Image 1: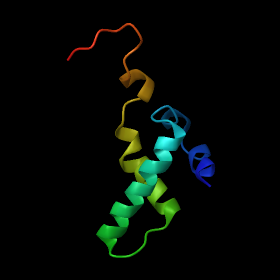
Image 2: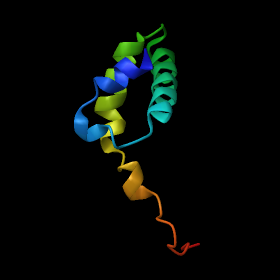
Image 3: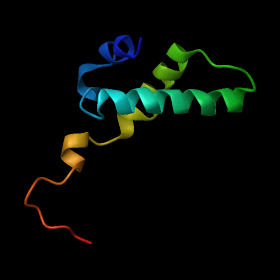
Length: 74
């Protein structure tokens, strides 16, 4: 089922996170939406909300991760 969600995401958003992380975050987003609404929110509705309101604002994961050999800035 989660592969169907990710397959339906806009192409430019597929680089944002690894598929397993997207799956986890959609489920967490669904929980927050359900708590806010006071009832269970449909998973596909939560996935659409996550893509529109959360995922689109995230940087591409590969751009956010340091490359090997890059010194830590800590």
